[in-house]
Length: 262
Image 1 (tube, one colour):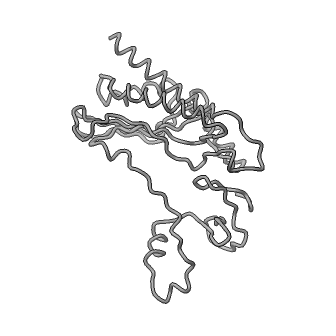
Image 2 (cartoon, rainbow, N blue to C red; image 1 turned 180 degrees about the vertical axis):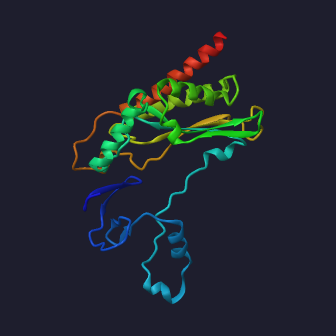
Image 3 (cartoon, rainbow, N blue to C red; image 1 turned 120 degrees about the vertical axis):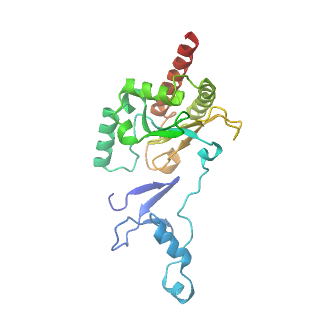
C-alpha cells in the first residue's frame, strides 16, 4: 500500500500514518488523537494486562480494535455450513494494482466470473457416521460450474441422497428477501463479501425451531459512495453480487423441482 493511501476499516476511511518509522504492520490515522493497527491476541492481552507505573510509558489503549459478532452456528447442534464468496469482483477499492490483477485472475479461473459466486468452504454433518465432512477454500476453488452445482446439492442433502427440502425452502425465502434488500442498496459494492448458509444437520433435532439461516459476513472490502467523496459515485446496486444470488436461487429451485419429479 502506498503512503497516504486510504484504507477501509469497518465503514471508516483511514489514511496511513505518515510518522511511522518502523514496525512490520501498517499504522493508520483514526482521528486527531488516535491511530489504529491490526491487533494480535498477544498485543491485546498486554495492553489490557499491564498496570501501575509502566502505564505512563505506554500509549493509552482505547479498546476500539476488535469486533464482536453473533455466532450463527451456536443455534444448531450439528451445523451444516456453506461459505459462498459472492460477486464477480473480489478486490476492494484500495487494492494495489498487483492485488487487483491477482483477484481478477482468480475470478476468471473460478466460478466467480461465470456464476457470480464460488465456494470457499463446506461442512456437512453425516448422521450415519456421526462425523463432519469438510472441504477448504483450496479444494473449492478448483470447482467448475458443474462441480459447484454438484457440491451445492451434496451440501443440501447432508451426506445422504435425500434433499433437505425444508432447508431449501427457508434458504429460498431468505434469498428472495436478501435480493430485494441488495437491489435497494444503491452505490454499495459488496466486494469479497461472503454468504453463509447454515442448517441443522441432525434431521430430528430439538435444539431450535429454526432449521436454516442465511447471513452476510466479511465486509472488509465493501464500499459505498459515502466512503470516498472524491470519486465518481457508483450508480445502482451491486450487479455482480445479485448475479451470484440469482445463481444460487435458481439452482435451489431446480433441485426442488427435480426432487418433486422423483
